[in-house]
Image (tube, rainbow, N blue to C red; front, side, top):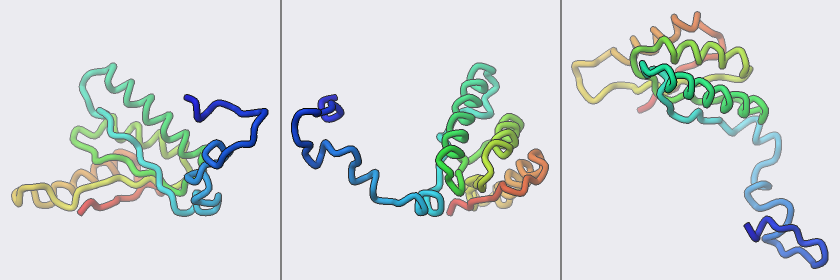
Length: 141
């Protein structure tokens, strides 16, 4: 891309400077205190093994990147039953990422007959991950 070409002989314009405005909006303290990473949604509980492996690798890379950036927390997408693969990935991620891990759980589903079901989801995941101390619920309203 032309804007990434290096100009060695001429004066750099403001848009060609080494740092852009978006690089300088937050200082390092703000990055490590106020920015939360978001793990991309993937098919963690697919029954198709190659899809599970792809999701596993994708989430692993994203968690390692968040750890490298020093983020205070990362947010995992809403899980859907069955939770076995999701819990396994979450458990392994908690050993790599030392910050908080937030799991988005809907406050309620669309139907009134499903009252309390999302609490069962959270409780199942919490139990499968052996009550990890850095895993928290993030209620989705």
